[in-house]
Image (tube, rainbow, N blue to C red):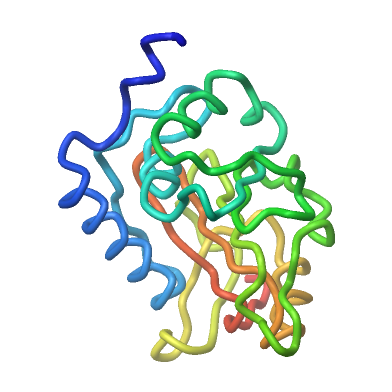
Length: 189
């Protein structure tokens, strides 16, 4: 085993994972907000924020799909050592990691069932930046409206129509994270 695999996890796991979990829940509850996630130093191409999310929300019972160049031996080994999440195909994933282009088509991911809408996938979408306002958001957790940079509007509009089924999204860039739950209505700005 490469010794680098042993590096990059939380130095103080109970405290740092609690902070990361709180930040993840805050951005999911307040679409359009951005929080900082620190403490993880995952291998490239995974960002620090994506690494902190993986350390916080993945475990041996949460299948993870690595898409595109995120599916490399360094990332697989890091995930295996730090969280033990099984690496699976998109159709079996509870979580997926990659950029927008390699995660497509979204129809590969579970959207839940009427009996169990929570059995859907959550996608961690790596972005160059979270800055910008390409979409207007409305819905739970948003007082009037919020702005967010999204890779496109149509996919998220179609996802919201599926509610209570659908996908949830985290967006990461560097040490920043934002989120878009399936309950959010999206309009192109």
